[in-house]
Length: 141
Image (cartoon, rainbow, N blue to C red; front, side, top):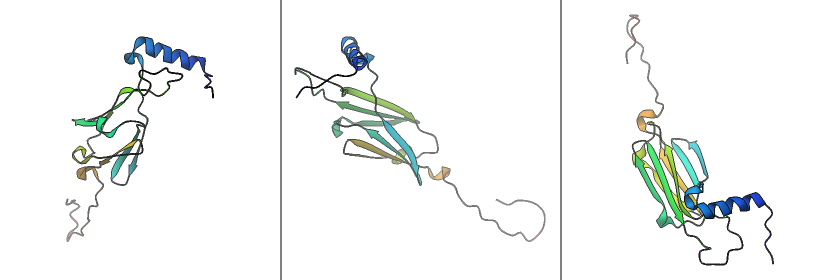
């Protein structure tokens, strides 16, 4: 069976990447993020990445996700190489309302899932109202 290349511009981009090296290649780490109750959840697509190459770091309010994928085509007669290899990195700025001390991480089926809880002080809270004995007009906290 023969593989066909139908996008000449994609091939030109790949050739340019090979000539200029990894520095010219924008490495993507697709992500979905959403709020789920009292936590923010992020899913990063990292197919083919071994879990031991994933590195997570939080410094102040910046979360850095790093990962690496081996080049499966290295040393082979390549017919087509569309999957990026090498190091990937992505930084996210986390708000002060998030509890960066309690981030959990899980990696399954090529998807890295991070859960970042909302900090207790940022959660909505109920304020009880008491009925005063007088009508002084003052608000008691």
